[in-house]
Image (tube, rainbow, N blue to C red):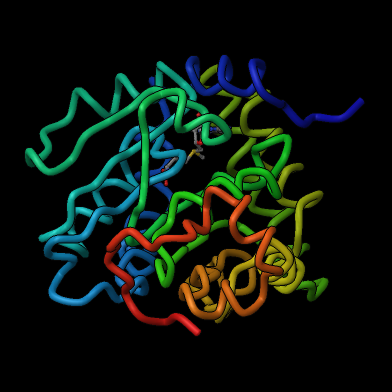
Amino acid sequence: MTALLRDADLAAAFDRGARAYDRLVAVNPGYHAHLRRSARRLRLPHGGAGRHVLDLGCGTGASTAALAWALPGARITAVDASAGMLRRAEAKRWPARVSFVHAPAEDLARAGVHGPFDAVFAAYLLRNVTDPDGVLRAARAALAPGGRLAVHDYALSGHPLHRAVWAAVCKGLVLPLGTALGDGPLYRHLWRSVEEFDSAPVLAQRLRRAGFAHVRVLPLPGWQTGIAHTVLAARPGREAEEAAAPPQAAAADPAVPAAAAPGHPVGGSA
Ligand SMILES: C[S@@+](CC[C@H](N)C(=O)[O-])C[C@H]1O[C@@H](n2cnc3c(N)ncnc32)[C@H](O)[C@@H]1O
């Protein structure tokens, strides 16, 4: 039987796990520093002043805090499917430029979350969703042409040593700690979801297939070397998208407005 949790089961596990989540990540060396590093890697100019950033799967707000720190000028909309995780996030102190929305990443518009965003940050999200390609398409559609994506996650390098370290950390620390706190199924899911989801190079390919350009895999240091990565990408600029799409397809795609609305393309575009 697979240990993977999906959809309502996963949201319920995160609802329950929200109580202990912050305590668990606090004992994970590098967790917050790595999120800040990935947020900085978005390299939005002028500290993100005048830009709007979407934090997809914000959880208890660890990734949101990293974005708020790295981009002190940006407006941040943070979204999560678990009401319990979101309550924990909302209970913290935030500047007025940060707001939270309870919504699945797959259905942002229904929850009133509309782009165009200048950047999307997805930390520890993609391997949790049933349809990662659908979530990537939604992220691309939410971005302005030229907007940036940072996927931050445990995605193994492909080297057997890193897979062995991941298994040892999970068996020796993550699972015993998670189980002691009453969240065994959630942390078994964490272990297995990383083993069963894309390696970092395969994840990069997935982003390219979803229509992202300038895809780059960047390492993270510490025990997470070869285990956690930032994968950076950009929605192609308007000209590149128009050149790539047949005219009728471009007009039919709501993500590619025929008459361009003025967004804030942030470079990195083709
Ligand atoms: C491991 S936590 C990461 C939270 C946060 N980004 C961080 O860096 O600490 C993953 C989060 O993704 C959320 N999530 C999972 N599937 C989702 C979906 N389809 N839509 C939105 N959020 C989802 C979970 O509820 C959970 O809060």
